[in-house]
Structure formats: C-alpha cells, structure tokens
Length: 125
Image 1: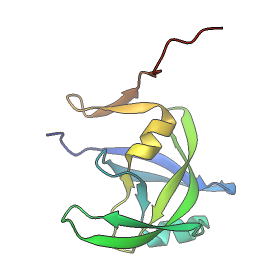
Image 2: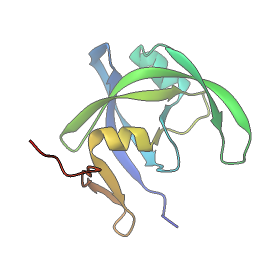
Image 3: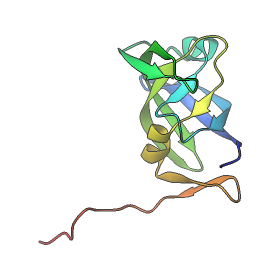
C-alpha cells in the first residue's frame, strides 16, 4: 500500500489565474478528482459548473459540484476539474489532475515524477 504524502501545489481559478494560492495537498491516486475545501475554492472564485455523484472511501455516495481550476507543480501546469468540497474536506490531488500534469506517483520515494506517455497503436504517416 502506498504511504500518504503531501506536495505543495499552486491552485487558481481557471478564469482568473492572477488569484492563486499555494496549497499543501495529500496525493491520492484513489481519488478521481482533486478536492478543494470550501473556504479555498470560494476565496479563489471557482464556481460550480456541473454536479457529480461520488463514492466515498466508506462506500457512501454523495453529490458534489465540480469547478474548473488551474493547478501547477514542478514547472508544469494544467486546467483540471476539481471537486468543490465542504469546509472539513482535506485538500487532495487526484488522478485526473496528475494525468493532466503528466505526473505519476513514486510510492517508494513518496514523490511525483514524470509519467511515460503510452499510445495504443503504432502511428504511421
């Protein structure tokens, strides 16, 4: 099992990147989307765009809003969906954002590293 570790990620609203914050996030490849606590997404001006049904680790389902954000780490940046969490939610860096950043988890060294890019078939001209 992978140990839990944190990374510092810059987060901003996708529509206003001038208002950004550095956030310590738990790396969670088991979470599809990145999660931002309510005070943070409101401060950044991230707005709900659509709603999803999500399964929690305990098996219970909840409905949560998604918003559009920018995330940056290690000189890389991407736009990504983020779950607009509640006050008590822990900031998580999820798999969708990691893929957008082109990163993968190194569980031995508890760090993020550049991910290989795979194609399904040989490309021909």
